[in-house]
Amino acid sequence: MGHPLIAFNQQSPAHLLANYLTSQNISANVVQHDKEFVIVLESHEHIDRAKLIAEDFLANPTNPKYQQAAWDNGKNVQLAPSGHGFSLSKIIGDAVKAPFTSVVFALCVAVYLLSIFGLFAPIAQHLLMQPFSVLLQNHEWWRLLGPAFIHFSVLHIVFNLLWWGMLGAKIERTLGISMLLIVFLISATISNAAQALFSDPVQGNLFLFGGLSGVVYAVMGFVWWLGWLRPSWGLSLPNSIVGFMLVWLVLGYADILWVSMANAAHTAGLISGCLLAATLSLGSGKR
Image (cartoon, rainbow, N blue to C red; front, top):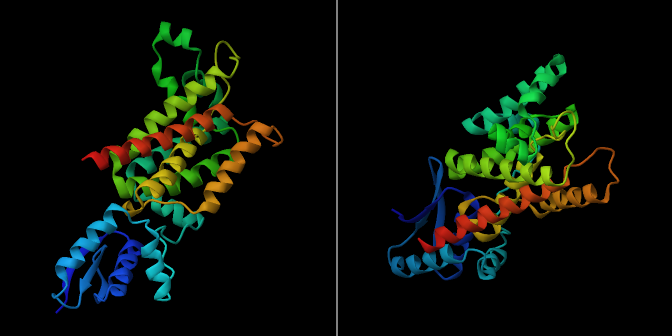
């Protein structure tokens, strides 16, 4: 009969710790129970030492000694979970299982469909951002969020919703709907406000920019930094994806793309997502 030591909601850190315990002559296996991965010791003899090792692992799971133990055992285990595929059906399926992700997804689709059926003008009139001087007079503060739901082309909405469906659902399933709601509200407000500062209004004090991309850069930065600061939480992104998004950001500033990019919104979104992750990590550490 084995002796349970600790449970993880991700498979990778469980195997990483189990490999290290084995390298320290403490026989350990990973057993899946429901949605958890439990490290089970074969003997109770080393339980106290195993607990100390587990505490050290939770405090610093990125220490190279754990990966070294995995290599020595012939198992290259990464804390970043596998399966970052871009299957449309998988991303939509994940989004459906996350209520707030699904609501934002559906609103963006609904607004886009109404727009292409001839209702863009009234939608834009009520959702597009206005100068701050105008907002101070009419108090239509929902416009700080409104542009996030407006998209101008199929490519625009598909690109944004693929990323939102993958990363938004990942945050919501791991940290809960409240955390994703906070990230969305703060990043949408900051990114739209930042873009307004670097744009000129048209069509009667309306800014003609929109899209979920500022929020997308925020959730990308949020997952990226939490994967770096708190890898044991199970949120992470491969370096290739982070690199792609950063290159895309730079290309927007270079102004060599065939589309007009909301560079200020992208940058502000990315910074806000990273800072939110850092704040959450710091607050968790203090607790």
